Image 1: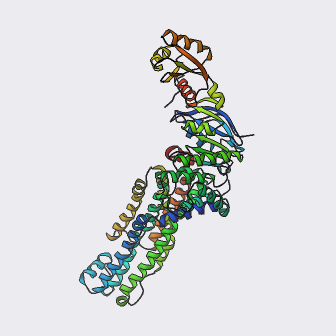
Image 2: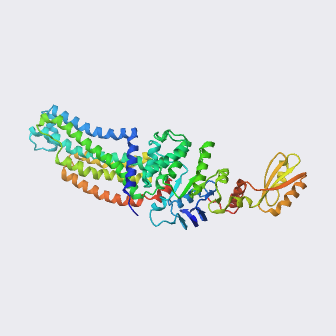
Image 3: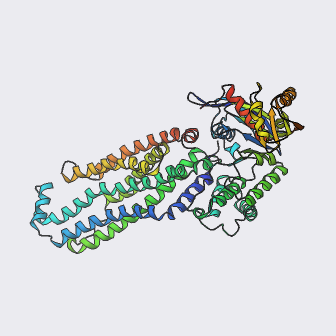
Length: 313
Length: 265
């Protein structure tokens, strides 16, 4: 069952279009990635879906609450959690005071909320630091505390903007494990991230946006779109890269030693790639079809968007 | 929309806790009341040490030409306290400005505004919570300062005058009726300005301009152009009450979540 349904959602600030034409659904227990370059409209989208900004066009339903809102949106916001790009904590207050303030704002039972918070604090290695002023915390500690704050009221939908930003590898892994567990409990998570390996590890589906929706797909399908060939040649493979890049369908070429990874949109061009290599004097030992890395698929989508003239300030 | 007193009180509690831990702001908050209390006590003390001074009688006759000379001391003590009330009113305006500017514009500066607005709190609850957090300390400080002023002035003047000068009806009316109206006004203007500008200092400076009419009023009283009294302050209080209502209406309209997020989030 879909917890988030978005239909033709868009936002304008005066004449400037921040984002338009967004349509997608996110199911219960799903970790959904929202990908796009800086300024693509990811944060605006999250702010619309959390009731912080009113959509200019389209509509959405989040946790059964319709957008645009007909009131101030307290009912919607009590069911969603938001990890903002900046942790946004009160430096003079302790970790506990910060968390209990939000427990009161969400009108949850303080004793239960604190018990839940302590579980997360222990897990994120912040136990024993709860009475210290947050101003003395490191960037990673602040980020972990902000994650605890976003989960304090046990929201059904959680929006996470770069959740592992500023975390060391071990802490990042702990956070990723927690995200996976929340999804397993049936929570819906929307992850805004530039960290594509993290998206690959956590998300089942993604939306790629750059001011408008470029793709909504499962990661598996996204990487299948187009083709990548892993080609083994004699000698330094990159010497043949110019010949491949001159092809009219503009394949992406990466190489190291005798190996070339050639990505292109239409698998009908595979024989043209081999022919171009042979014509350039390459002795081809093998050519294997491989899945494209997510980064390749993502960059291609974002570049196509720019070629379409869809990029906006 | 259901109003939640718990959420408004949560903001009040958090802002008060934050204020108590902000030593710099606390220091600047107490400097003004200390001055407002000490100066009139010092002036009264100076008058009573030389009750028969010719200069004192000349000053009294400047304001009241037909005043019998033996009443000059009492007249000047009462005159100073009457006129000083305009300066005292700077305190209920300025203390909420100091607190509100920090608490609203400070949320933007510290990037805490988005998580706060992403919670279920409504604009009304937020305005109420933040206003309480500045009005309650302002009221407490004003009353405490008044109590100290009464003690100081009476200690200084009792032997010379043979009676307590403070509290009197005008000051009691001023402290418990007029001062809260001014505090509400200062807080409202500071909340509105700090919702529109980016940093606490600018909000303070702009809101601080509110005290200028009070300084002008005091100058007019010292010059003898304006004659202060309970009626005079009641009229000013009525004007401020109208302004308070206008500010309340404007605050509901201008303290808009979307506008705040689009500009400062």
